[in-house]
Length: 380
Image (tube, rainbow, N blue to C red; front, side, top):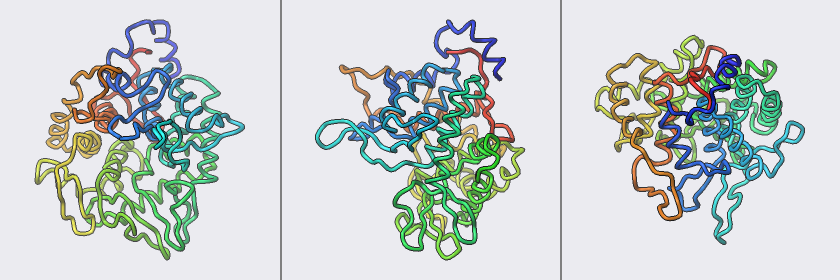
């Protein structure tokens, strides 16, 4: 892939990423010039480490190194208090935005392990694809901090990813999030850091999903107590906005990965629901299978790779029809015309839309070892 990049680098004066309109629309509307990703639908105009990590991934898929560097720089300065170098890495705070006094800054200093995984992965893949050792070194250092602060050993199971360093272990109950373990990302980290816990985290992430989805629907949250997975004490049996990513990550994994087919098989309830009703439910009681609500566009985006990998052409066709809404051009926000959060597609629709549509359009895939394989047509 490095040779592909260098072959196109000389023609990089072409218009920016002209072949991925959805990416240009996303960066124009939601990414500030300084590299801050903003979710305008929130009262605090928040930025999350998740948003930064996903945008870095999209910039890598788009071969847009300038935007990647801006996103990284903003994350370093504002979420990691300038402690984001190979020799001194701090896990980034997960939430930043407008404080009650009107100033802007960190709203919650806890880190989010899924975002940290994605940022480490983005950096390691950027180092490989763009042949830049400084990205690789930072990715390795961040991964080491994830292991140190966000991985716990559960009795009778082994290593498991905590959602963050603080607040998820109370007495003998450990709260877990099934959507925080993307199989391709864990495989990619395992390939770059073979002596780490990444493959074990993938195996145990699969066990979490398979055990907590008795009717083929993943819950948003679960817990571990006395050697077994149990219902989450706070969110109970609900599967909704967090869980939708579980189907997305399963759909993105290489079919050559030994966990791919069993992971998809554990999540068959959602495919069956869409086949029967023609749309994904917004919420599911994962224990009873009782469904409610009609989902937003982001669900169709997340499920498109899942349908594609399962070979469900009818449901994939429905997803494509819904995703056509993402092709509508949206003007960049300005002081005179700030973004209207009531106008579709909103932030999360567009974020998951880039994952889902980008995959089914062939803009990227993951190989068996979790390496990103982008379809670079030109540099930005």
